Image (tube, rainbow, N blue to C red; front, side, top):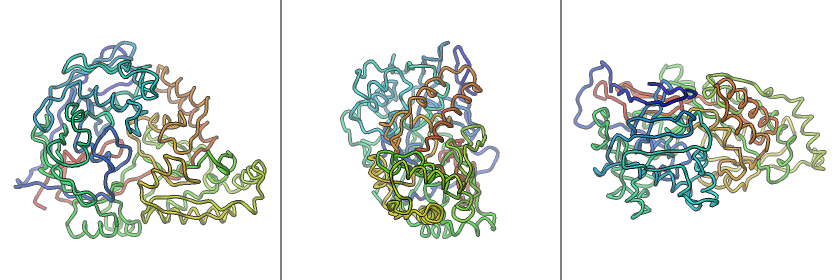
Length: 536
C-alpha cells in the first residue's frame, strides 16, 4: 500500500515483497561478487554521524530503517511490520517485525529509541540532527534545554516504538527512510563506542550486508547478512569496494573488467570521456535530486551584502557550464529545489547569465560597502579536488572576471578539508552541493531555517522564511503546502545566500551481465537487488 501523505486516520502499511529477478534466468555462481569503486574513504560507518554521499551509500548497504523508499516513490515497511498514524497525524506507532542483528541478537524498539536519542544528545557529533526536529522536543533536547526523556521517542515494548511529533509532518515517513534514522545496536554502542571504525566482532548491522573487512583508504568488503529478514531476496554474496580517487584510473579498471559499475557520483566518470561513451550508447543518465551550488559567506564582507551576492549569482553563465563542462544535459538551476522534489516542475526565479542586472547590482553593492568597483578585493574560491570541480572553478573564475572584473583565486583541498571550512565558515566563496536525503523539498529548505544548522554553510537566517516553513506544516492539502513553500523559495532567492548552478543528472555505466538494477527517486542505487543474468 502506498502512503498518502495527507490522509487522516489510522494507516497500516503492508510490505509487498519485491521479486528478486522477475522471470529472468540466473546462472548459478559459486560466489556472486559485485565490484564497485568510491573515490574517497567514507568518513564513518555509523549512520547516525553520516552527512555526505559516499558515507550514506555505505550505510544503506549495511543498515535498514523502519520504512524504505521504493522505486515508484512510495514508502513501505522494512524493519517495521506496520505503522499506525493518529487522526491528528502527530503520533506514529511502529510495530516491528522482530528482525535480527547480524550477530543473531534481536533488533528492538529500544535500539531505535537509543540511536535517535543519541543523535539528539547535545554533545553527539551528528551533522544531520536537524532531520529529527519534527519530533516533539527534539530540537530543544539537542540545544540542552530539555532532557532526552522529554523527547517524543518511546519504546513501548521490545517490538513497539511510539513517536510523537511537534506538528503534523506530511513527509515524516519519507524522512525516516533516510539512513540517519537507521538503528544501532544499543548494547554494543554503550559498551564499545568506537565499534563503527573497524570491521570485527563489535560491528553488527541489520541490513542486507555485513562489514567483512575495511582497509582504510584502500578497500572494503561487504558480505551477505544471513540474519537479514529478507536474505532470500539478496542474490549477491559479496560487494568489493575499491577506493581509487583518480577518475581515469577507475575508468580503466571498469574498461578492463575490474569494476561492474562506474559513476553515480561516488566514482565519477571523467568529463572528457562522457561524449565518446554517449556516442557508443554505453552511458546511462538519470535525473537526480541534487544541485551544485556556490556558497557565499555572509559573516564577512563583501558577501555580507545581498546585492554583491546577487551580482555574482546573475553573472554566471550556467548554460555554458552545462554544455562545455558537465555535458549530461543537466537543468540550469535558476531555482533552489531540484525539479524531482517538485513533481518535475521547473520554475525560474531569475534569469541565467543576466549581465545587465549583474552590473547594476554589483555597482549598487559596492556603493553600499564603500568599495571602488575597480579596486574590488581579490576573492578566494574554495573547492574539493577533482577534475570536474577544477574545470568548474576555472570557468567561474573566467566568467566573474569577464562580467564583473573581479579577480578570483581558486584554491582546492581534500573534500574533508572543504567540509571543515564550510562548517566553520572559514571561507569567502565555496563550491558545494546537496543531494536530497528524503523525497520532499523541505529537505533543502529546512537547512536554512536557522543559522546554527551545520549544513547552513552561508550562515543565513530570516524570520519570514522561518514563519513560512512553520506555516507549511499546517497546510491541509498538497497544493496549499506547495504554494507556501514556493513563497519561501522566492524569499530565499531574493536574499541569495548561495547561487544554484545546475540540477543534476547522474551518469553511470553498468556491465551487461548484471540485471534487476533498481534506482530510487532520491537517485540512490539499490545494491541489495542486483542479479547476475549470466556469468561475467
